[in-house]
Image (tube, rainbow, N blue to C red):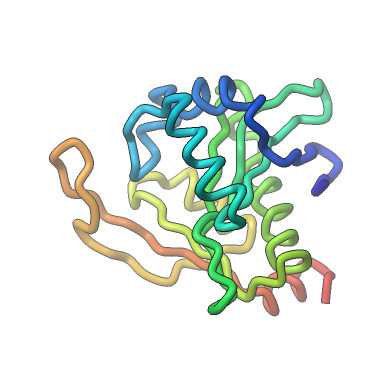
Length: 179
């Protein structure tokens, strides 16, 4: 299991459904996602059956080691083994753990997993342009801005700009001493 001095990542299971739904449906989490519909047990079950079990996605629960508290989730979705890439996503569902570097730390763990274990070449993400805190966290983890798309998505009837970010295996592994 991926881990560092502050956290350990556990593979998601159906037993995590209640936490995933609680975390993901909180306003402070939901408002930072492009997809803002409420999660239900049915949507999580469908995700587990059609994405996790098929290998199209991998998802981990983030546990903070200091107090052994489960605080959120990190994942790779739409894993494309032909082009060796996937989309990154994360949410910290416990407010007290925001702003502590946990997000960038979990991102680095998943990037190392993506490049060293799955053998992907690239991991990318989309972030709402006004989510400055998340964009800084992603840059800290190694993502670079690759594009800015104006009025790219509609959320609650309003157009929003999106920043595309990505990181490639050769650069990430070299920068993190894993050549």
